[in-house]
Length: 152
Image 1 (cartoon, rainbow, N blue to C red):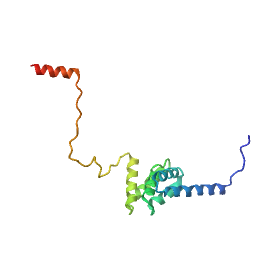
Image 2: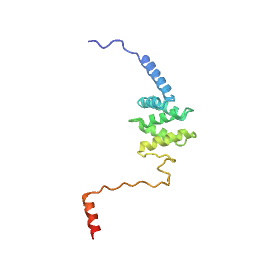
Image 3: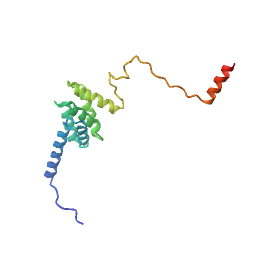
Image 4: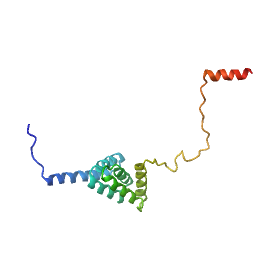
């Protein structure tokens, strides 16, 4: 069986990769967060090209979903690109856009293993309600002790 077939030239490969990068960039700017995150994850595997696109989306004038997805893609970087992606996220902490700052804060905290909590969440507020305590199951030894103490 002959698998050689037609060999691709370097130019055809470049055109195909450029076309793929454009498609992923369009999906990254989608309003659907699932589609945007999937595109960001795929871009995270594309080394320098993916880093450049994710950085451009994170720092540019793009919707919130795109920025959050770009931060997800940056924290999903592996290998030698992880250090560069971390530097991009740390630089984003000083960015003037609050959406960019928030996305970078969350991505860095997740990378470091800290789980962020919302400031307005129910765990942080005291609701004034008392908590319901569980009732201990009566075991035979508890029943015997109670009957002995009441008979005395």
